[in-house]
Length: 148
Image (cartoon, rainbow, N blue to C red; front, side):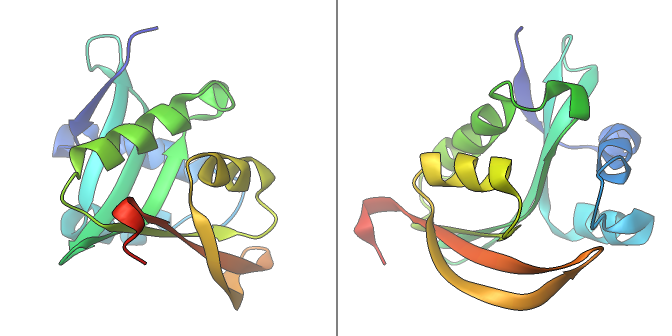
């Protein structure tokens, strides 16, 4: 299946929001999603000539860092390499970035496995970061050129 990554536009918003709202826990809700869409860089993972969104990534740059604030893949496309494809391509696009940061629920085994496979290293735990259900977040970093 051929997929592409593109900058998300307003036309993509509803499809990406549907993916976010289909998550089992800790969705941002419509308002939070809209705020991030406006303020972050938003990328869509698409198929079918860019018509269907199967995933997205939000993040923001600060000097030589890129903070990944949200990444999700549509349920029926999970565990098939699309998360790896999306994240690795964003990292490749951001060649000038030295450090990539993200937080992940400590119990999210598939995401933890993906991030570790990609070379992200654990930094510290934020206790009680997640609310639905309550849980801790592991802050992780991928350093390019051994910057950290």
